[in-house]
Length: 134
Image (tube, rainbow, N blue to C red; front, side):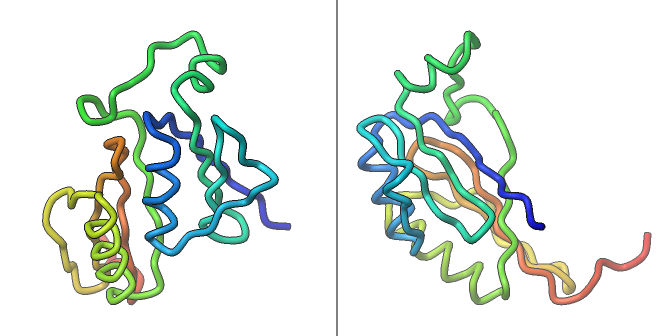
């Protein structure tokens, strides 16, 4: 049985964040959406819970991290191909995201990444072969 993964992220503007991920081609699950929460469906086992700052503060006593200033987590999505990485990067840019660095082609793996409107960084990669032995 596959385990589901839910990544929860605080967002400053829930409608803007929902629109951003929908522009990347992801849907939302209305059963898990409210005025301060949205569930973005990445695939059958991976979901991103977007939480308003008020909702986030109700879940923890820790200070809210400004992802534009501090690293909080590394989120990486495996893509099926280099072309899918490039297409998602284009969608992210058109929807208000920004590239984080330059694309890297390692021969066996292609990678690039973007920051969403709240500054959370997303790495995208596609592996065409296993990595070379060390």
